[in-house]
Image 1: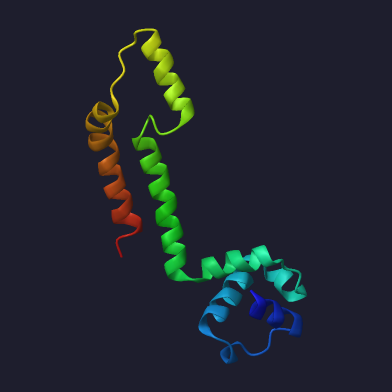
Image 2 (image 1 turned 90 degrees about the horizontal axis):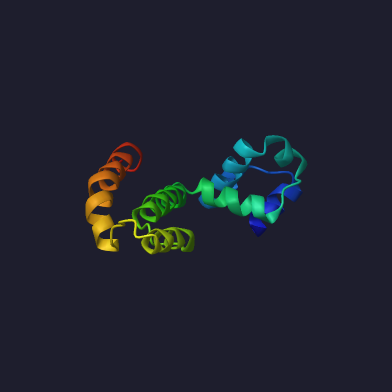
Amino acid sequence: VGQVQQLLQTGVPHLPAVSEPVRQTMRALGQAHGTSLASAQLGADDIRLAALLGDVVGCRLLAAVSVAAVFFGAATYLGNAPNFLVKAIADHQRVPTPTFLGFIIRYTLPCLAPMLVVVWWFFFRG
């Protein structure tokens, strides 16, 4: 972050003289904040985000963790308090609800697992 801020304050000299991560960060900043980059009015948070997005491996990792959080959060209907509250109310009213393992076997594996494989195939395979 410090190197990028220094480059912005000095007027962005030749980028071949800087390291590859700084060059990737500057490229990501240029794509996202073209006018702000020219006037050097970017905060440290913008630079940190650009450093993450400029790194191909980090960007793929962030996307994979986000997708996994969405799918595995949906896989556990008892994973958070509101869902647990709904299950407790349904159980109190004697509405049949599956157990945790019953939910995994009956709904998660047949429905969400194939969807996760399809998402991996299209977005994370190569």
